[in-house]
View 1 (cartoon, rainbow, N blue to C red):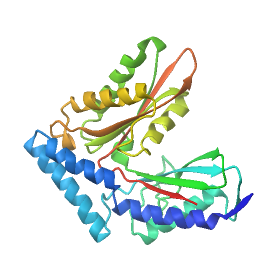
View 2: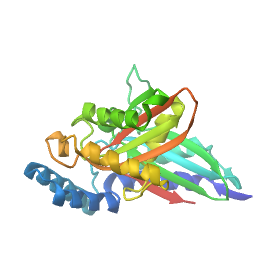
View 3: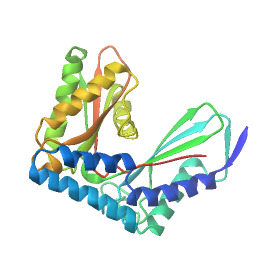
View 4: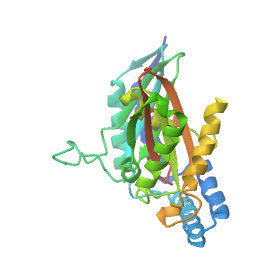
Amino acid sequence: MRRLESERITDAVEEMCRRAAVELPVSVEAALREAAEREQSPLGRSILSDLARNAKVAREKSLPVCQDTGVAVVWVQVGQQVHLVGRPLEDAINEGVRRGYERGYLRASMVRDPLRRENTGDNTPAAVHCEMVEGDGVRVRLLPKGGGCENMSRLTILRPGDGVEGVKRFVVETVEAAGANPCPPIVVGVGIGGTADQVTWLAKRALFRELADKHGDPFYAELEAELLMLVNDTGIGPQGLGGTVTALGVKVEAWPCHITALPVGVCLNCHAARYGEVSL
């Protein structure tokens, strides 16, 4: 059994919050530059070039890529041979978020109660998802999720007979209904299967994947490629002003489900597809 001080998780989360806010993943910056080269709309090309330049300036000057520094979505995989010592896991994560947002001078966007709307002042609590895995390590992943794209999330329960065509229709309808609101070019996370609560997590979890990553199952890899083509064919374009690049990528995650249902969840991420990861 390996002992791990939960303070190390706090320190890691603090650093990830501060770094993810100002540094887009290299793959996302590269995708923005590549999209600017292939976008057919002159205005779209100009917007994409500005977004790539904004990411470069944010990295160089340690300034937030976007003023909306998001909800801190944290996915933790804890090895079964790990014994955490100190604060409980969620408390350790929230302390890291509090330090990261306060010390990094990042915008606090969380309200204490959904109806009375009092800001917590430190961007806590985080949305924490925990999974037990084999081994004696802890993997912590952070996704700062902006409100504009998060608000465009959708869930439906299709009939099994709707099949893959029904899934494709729902994904495209979701993107079209979102329009400019999620600040395209977007990354589309799609969950298929599970239950109503599980499928929304599958869609969010899909956004933790590397932008260049292809699904390990050829069937779903092909579906991702087709969905990306269909989404870009909507013509929404960069910032919703028209063009051929509406999305930088589509990621699909699937799970077994009940024989009577075909749950589908869609979660959109904006062009500032921020991400952090550490293994302890």
